[in-house]
Length: 119
Image 1: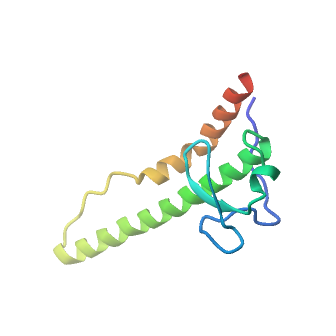
Image 2 (image 1 turned 180 degrees about the horizontal axis):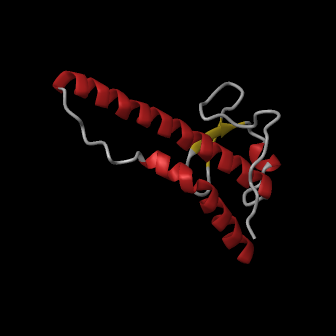
Image 3 (image 1 turned 60 degrees about the vertical axis):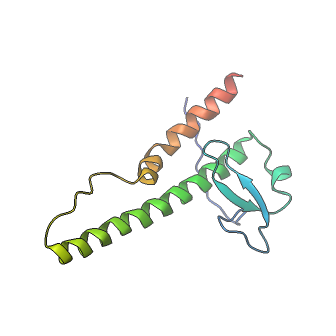
């Protein structure tokens, strides 16, 4: 039994950057990714609740998606800069860790939730 943790946000309840509105720091349970919320967040979304897992999954997904995009773009830019500079290929076989994490994130959360339910 897999737990569906995707959702559509109608109103933002967090930010990856600190703002005047989202000024309270939180960390995801699974991968310790920092995000910011209003002070009432922990009351409205208690730890180990389904709604909290949905938010944390979304935080991590957006974080890794952004990191993957930035690092992939950097690799491509480095490649073309070096290719033009030296007219030879650079060996970039390593996929950025954030891209690999993004591919396994949903499975990690499903396994984590199932493990908590067995307690």
